[in-house]
Amino acid sequence: DNIRAKATVSLLRDGRIVASEAGEAMFRKYGLSGICTFNLSRHARPGDELSVDFLPFVAGAEARSFAEGRLRQLQKVGGGALDCTGFLRGMVLPRVADVVLKRLRIDGGRTADADRAMRLVAELKDFRARVEGPGDAEHAQVRRGGFCVEGFRPETLESKAQGGLHVVGEALDVDGPCGGYNLHWAFASGLMAGRACVS
Image (cartoon, rainbow, N blue to C red; front, side):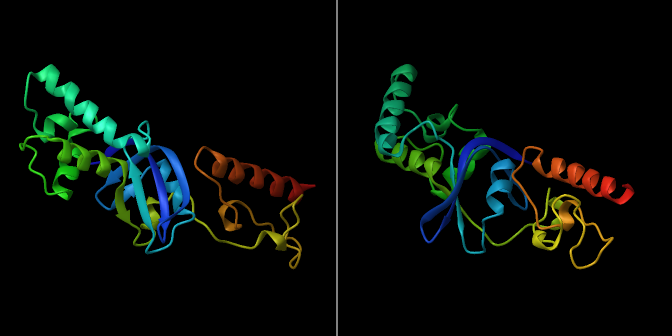
């Protein structure tokens, strides 16, 4: 099953941010997906890391005060002790909470003290996944690569080396972020080349 979550996803290389995207991240059986990941994948290399921030509304410097404040508030509302699952409830989806607890080796039934609350918030602010490489082509929305655009006339998309040969869409080395840009390029380049062929 897929899990969708609003998040900010950053691509890290040697500990430095290469690119960052805010939106919806999708966790699938084969790895990370969703618009954020699609847009970051154009920059990714094997060995890079993805940092998923499930709490982008909490500034990094405020993470501790957020964790402690939330813990105090929930304890007050609940009238006493709170377990770690309860601390995460309402902050992230239950299945995300389960994964975070498992990764930190924290039993969800254990009491949520200040230390555990901070560890949970820190993990939600910087949930790491390693980039192993591109996914299967069948899962791709667009593929990079193709003929070098400098070899084609921009008005007609006709090859400069081979007259009468027009190349369009993904066959050219043109790709854009999600949001309809790649579909627009496919249709617009096809129209340009088609009109040039019949004129």
